Length: 400
Image (cartoon, rainbow, N blue to C red; front, side):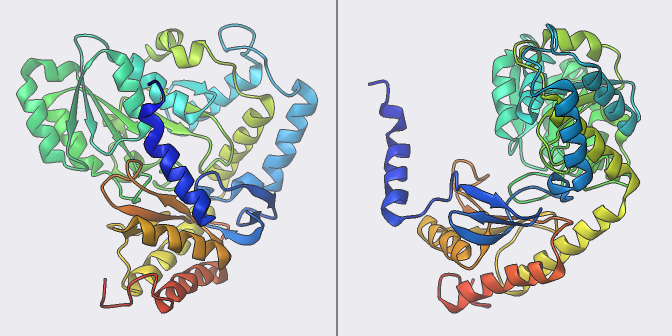
C-alpha cells in the first residue's frame, strides 16, 4: 500500500500525542525578543532558533523590511528568470559577492534550494562527487538528483578523503568535494586546512556549505574557510540567510565566472518564485550589521563557551568543542523526550533530534546560542539541565 512506508512515523506521532509532548513543530505563539517568546503556552528562553547574532529581531532589520514591503509589495509572484529579478535582488547578490571578496553570487529563495540546487547541478553523469558522510539532507537531496557517482568519506576525516581521491586517479581533477563549515547537529568544525591540502594534492573543486558558520567564524565572519585561511582553495561557498542573518533564503558565491551561466541551469533557481522584497531588504541590512559590528561575534562566542563549559561541567556528553551549537548527546529516546518536555516546562526551549535526523544512533538535545542571550539566560539554561539531573532524568556527574 502507498502509505505503508509512513507507518513508523504514524506510530511515533501517536506516541508523542499520547505523552502530550510536541518536540517537532512546537508552536510559537508570541515573540518578545530575539531570545524570549511564548512556545506551546509557556514563556521560554529561545535556545533552539539558530538566531546566532540575534538579528531576526533587530529594529534596523525590521525597519528595512517594512520599508521594502511598502515600496515593492509583499512578493514578486515570479521566478528570477521571469518577473522576479528586482533591483534589490541584484543588489544583495553584489553585497554578498563583495562580502566574500569574489565577483559572482546567486541568491536563492531558501537555503535548502541553494545547497540542493547547486549540488544537483554542478556535477552530472560521468562526474564524481565526494561528500562528508554527515552532510546535511539538502546536500544529499541535491547530489542524488545530479546523476553523478557519489562517494561518501568518513565525517571530518581528511585522510579518508585523500584515500578516495587517490583511488580516482585522473578523475580526481574534476571531482566535486562537498563539506560543511560547522555541522549543524553537534556543532563540530570541518578540518578545512587538511581538506584543502588533499584537494591541492589530487585536484578537484571544493564546495563549502557555510550555513552555520557564516557570521560565526572568521576574522570578518565569512565562515570556516576564512578562519582556516584556505579561502583561495574554495571554488564555491553556499549558505543561508536563516541563521546569522535572521531571515530566510540562501546564496552561492564563487570566483568562477561560469557561475553566471550555471544559474540558468539550476531548477531550484529557475522554477521557484524569488524572495519577497522585505526579506531581501532585511538580509541586506543584517549583512551590513555583520560587517560593521564584529563585537556581535565575540558576544556569541562568549555565550557559546559559557554554555559549553557549563554543560560539560555537569558531566553531560556534549560535542567535541565549544560552538554556537551545543548538543547534549543521549542514547535513550524515552529519556530524551522526557528531558525535552521538562526543559520546556522549566522555561527553556531547545531542539530535540532523533535518528535518522541525528548523525548517529544517538538522540540530541540541541541548544543554539545567540549573541543576544544574556549571561543570566545562559546560566538559567545550565541550571535547567542541572535540575534534570536532580530529578533523575539525566545522569549526575560521574554517572554518565
